[in-house]
Image 1 (cartoon, rainbow, N blue to C red):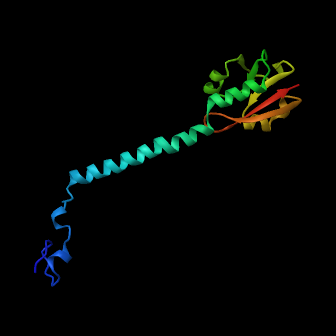
Image 2: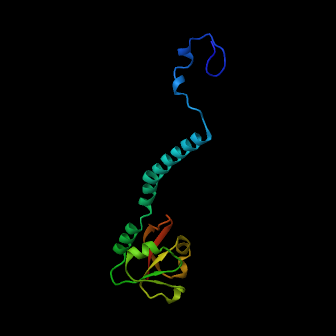
Image 3: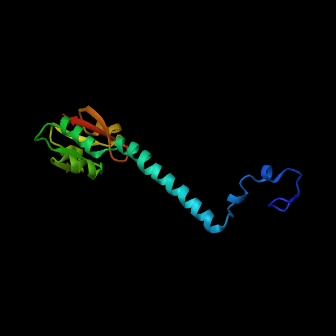
Length: 146
């Protein structure tokens, strides 16, 4: 008996092709549709599962809230090279960018990058207050210069 592929076989037709009536030709359009459906499913999983997990660790609102707890009201936070407008926006208190460490008022709260913290001897007497993380997941060092 000849099967649907054009080959001969001794097996009964029902054993050779039980889904013969459901056979679908793999045309380029159907392959594209199947690819797009799989891509859409992967995209939905990424947006609904992966992105929220990442965002939880990089939440500027939570970082700003913690920064408000650490810095007393009325104090102006000083920044050197830190550029995280999201955290500073949600912080909602005065912040000034400084270029010269010698011009810092004493005492002062400063937000430093990890590299600036490593070179903290240029600031004088510095006390680590806490380490936080910016929106990209990079460390922010909250310190007090005395």
